[in-house]
Image (cartoon, rainbow, N blue to C red):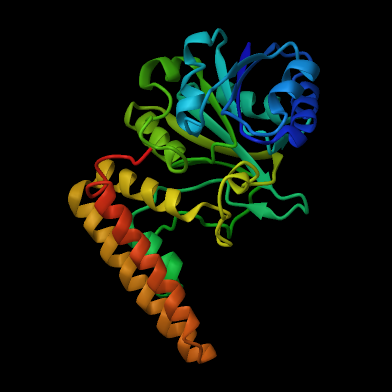
Length: 314
């Protein structure tokens, strides 16, 4: 049996498509749906109760965040596998079997992700490596080309039809063994949104399990559908900038200590300066400097609020 955990937040318009795709992929497999509605303001709950009566639905009085909402379903899990699935992720008919095949061929595989694409078929980052203050700085500033030996978070220049081990896979389609959940738990509740799956995969790998990517199948992922209903999304990565900054600080403090947080902040400010100068030289416009200055101020503000990445704000 596969327990499918779905966290919904203001995505009533996507539920029918998401469930239909998953039902089709699960034909011949035993699926059980566990849905947490994170205090949606649209008619999500009514749609779930009317159109998907077979799903167990828990309605939260407030939005508790992505990771914490998933964690609420852990006591209910009954099967051998757990699939975390976003409401804006639409599986292909062979997605579940392809992911299960990887699990069955690799006994120490604890997590499997698949190839992610947009509606237009464009490749999304699907097979990723752990972020560090330095590799994020190199990628953001474009200086990575000067140091090709540094492994970046996303390396897209390879055949994504294949299979390989990696550090982490995105949480929109995230298949785990139930035994791994029993051993390491699910998400760290300090992350309200973003970085929770990176942290989880670190713990999975630290416990001796591996994380695999397979390109044998794909999932269409829209991205940002819940987030854009709550706040402004950055054009780069379709993420809420303040939450992204906070999660990065929490992650670096947990895994790299205070030195890691300080290195991240210094390199983030340096990156803002590099980008400001590059854009000014290229376009002769001062507004880019203002944009990067605002980013630096946001980082400094959240650094102070979180006590240097020690405590979440939500």
